[in-house]
Length: 248
Image (cartoon, rainbow, N blue to C red; front, side, top):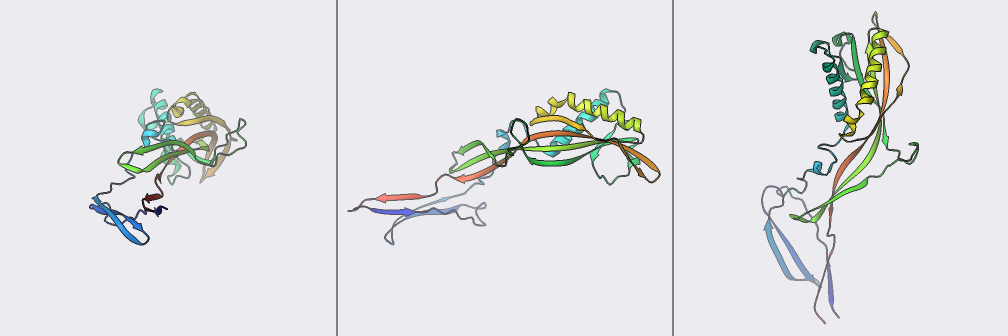
């Protein structure tokens, strides 16, 4: 009858782990008696030092900040191509900005996030929210033979509102139509940078407010934006070792 011994390998993290070489050992225990010990001294590298971006569909992952940056670049470049001088280029900034309106001139375009939720993946876009992450990639590195790096992704739907503010109705209306056509005609810019779906969802009512003695008119535009977020997770490939050796 053979003797069987099940050993469990535990990973412990010490404060000196990344500073100097550590001594690791594997001991064989037979009925409470240590029969063999194997030791090695080595320095453990940082297992999280890898570039996730190489697994992404683009140079960098799409984010809300990147979407706003691309939109700002589109708005600015379109005005430059129209011959607008630097001092008259319309600003693109976040909603509820602390700056006074007169600092922006006669017009300004602002953005804000109205909704962010798991993507609805059915054909009508009304049900089946994709709440779980999906497996995208799995990577094994030869210098970490017991580690598997899993890159997961999940699609996220956003409703983003871009609002054109102006000192007159005419300016606000003209800018809203201009912005609507600009983003629709250049939707490919977002799609080539990681946006899976982008479209104009609609325009809100013509509205105005009074600040001091100044009337300010605004026209809200809503856009649908879907992109994937990526996460990297690390798993141990070997969880248990069963050592079987001779004996009757």
